Image (cartoon, rainbow, N blue to C red; front, top):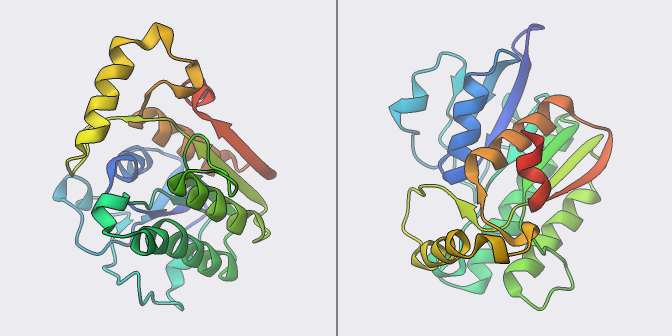
Length: 223
């Protein structure tokens, strides 16, 4: 449900994660945004939860409230995701990174939301030999079939930022990326989470018509 005519209403999915939290910070400070809805399993920290125009409903992603009025918004931004290690199995990983994302997108589209922005991954393809990238490609395919007026798929490389949970493998990757940056192709260099969030917010507010893929090396240039 739209708040008023002075700004846009945004649905932020995955608001407790690295990119999602940065989307929230930037969206809540943006004068073009009048309402932000961020459904999460647990309440968001007070650092963002004190804003009057933030709604933070607690939800069970296995049993989402299909008729909630907040599925209808100007744009939905999705940063939902986990890792195989944290999920515990391939099936659990697919449930989050494809199942939850596709279900949320379907409910938003059914409610009348016409713009969707996804934080995907560099190399995402349903034909990838990597299980992780194959699931990312499959969910991109799901969204592309949902008839959004504007669909933006961001494919960042390794994310550079302070995660709320430990990911030792990513820390090693970041160290290598920073040390050998001049030798690494631009599309594979680490990209700042703040830049990914800014590019996602820009895509949501501009809402370019059609399906748009934004590769990692183009994300920082959009700032």
